Picture (tube, rainbow, N blue to C red):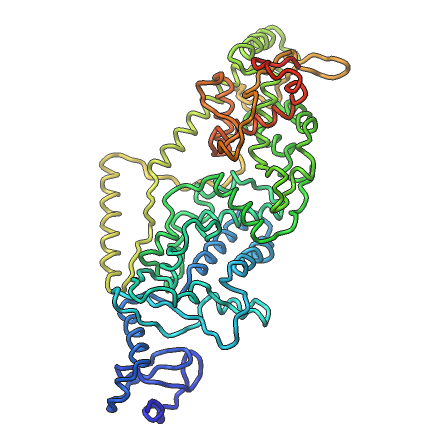
Length: 580
């Protein structure tokens, strides 16, 4: 009966160019191949046609799509694919290797989709991807017509001929009860959240940063994880409210916001751990070697952080000696081998910061007493002797850094407190409500501007250009606030042809390391338990890396136990200090 009703309509479909028409309950022609509905109508007389169950379902699905205006059909994995694309483009704009997006990150993402059986996997011939339609009530669960998704088109154009796109979420729809209410703009938004929440590698917004960092590490780019997360917070890399850059046809609704809407800052430890799990899950081979010429090598990173912390250049020789002494600059130690549990995973930026802290303890002790004695000696020498370079004064350095650090920390805290988590682009799910939402949003903006003028608040300045350095110091300054060229002669002595520290003692942060699997950390850290000088140095690098001070303290403890391993074995009860 359907063929007789459409026999005289021979126009080609504007979307797929096929001539294969059917009729909806409303009398409109629709294409059976792509389910495109035309404006052409035909009066339906036959009652047999009206009672056709299949035609009723198609009609209801299409009618709902027209009424709700929720855009095209898309899957959650497609949304994350767009997020990764935006992030990769932002990283390229920051100077990352152009091959990152197409040659590295794209392959990692394809491999993840294939491993999770969301795409690029074989399926039986003739099997179709079932789509879950958006329904307004829990009692009406009709299926929408099948249409090719964005990911399907991508797989057909970029993958091999024997690989086809499939979505495990869509194929598992038959397991969901017909009484389930689906309140999301994506096809599989509700099913995505219904999956086991304990699933380790279910895609999340923080995992997009894990993918990016994994690609950066594979290319050995001069960007650490702390740099990446800082650029995210500063807004140089899309992450917070990134869904507002989605195409207009990809509507976010209900449960989709729980997936793509972020209301917290990314956490270093979470992103790093997920990166390690991803690398093992994807069965990636050994990463390219981290050699002494790479930016991620401790010697290179120590040089960067010494400059940013405004410390003397001569300290770099000491950091290199510590790195060589405990063999943390070896290629096998630094290079990531996914799934290898016998080796300790390296946090390159934290490791370099911890090395500098250990060197400062070796030379200045940082016990709130010895460093001030050395500083007084250097001050007297600088007053009486104007020849040669000035001696490094720890007290003066402390005052300069504390002043700058307090200002930067206060500014950062204020920016975070004032941050509006709501996106600038208003969300609306219907064309009918669009004008109302935009009008209401404009009223809010006008009121904010008016109250701002009355209160005298200054409009936020444009975000500064991204920089690898948060604190910059120039030797051209005449106020003596730059300590890069200062000498360490006042605290060193020559012994057996080598310069050694005048300080003979050293105090350990902890005598015995904790079990990380049991305690969750290697050492306990409370600022009241340690000297203020040590806490200040830890706080400084905590600000530079934007991480918790305990992370740096843990790494300091590990380095100390490697450096003094022999003496710890000989004198396990001696816990107040060690004679070098």
